[in-house]
Length: 255
Image (cartoon, rainbow, N blue to C red; front, side):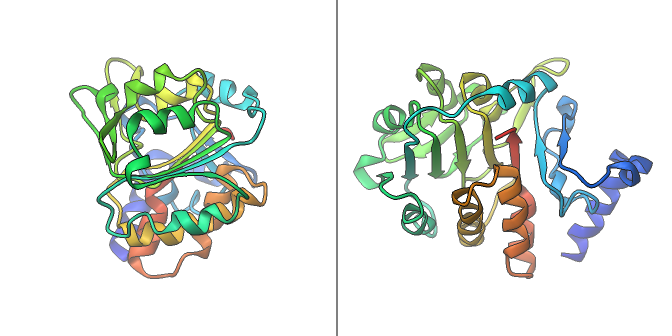
């Protein structure tokens, strides 16, 4: 952790400089240029304990803020294959939401998952993510029958209002010219998703479980994703693995 914390101090000095002293006490929204979207902003000391959200653009943040939750309040929890923990957080998270739809094993096939995600209020997807820098829209989440491609989300009538991705590299973005970005997060925000939690770096499956349980404690109590993520980081054990895992996740959008 000392090495990582030193990196955070260096990032803050380079990216915020003297502005860090003038942030005030309220929530912080970061709209970075394309090349800085992969920065783990929660690692910066002045942002570490803040309600922090990131958006690809000011327009995306405004659209997310104005997006209304869908009627019905359906919750969908998905467990993909190959996770070291088997998506161990999912059964406990399910208990927080009454009667959610839980898709696992043979039920966690890409067509079924897409059908259930359509119009959901909250989707939690525990799956390995793969980022393709050469073609970001073909980045994917691993389901029981193969990859669920980012491009597939465009087939939904409405993307889930909130999406929590306990996966690796799901927040990574690729610059395709100026500040135009492609990737999972930027694909979802225009499709009806108002908030996404995702990691911008490879993460340890076991440490993710603790973070996800703490995150859903806040979400189920009515907090925004950014508020719940801030509280979840504070609730994690103080060892290097858990702390670094908490810093790797970011809340995108405005829900």
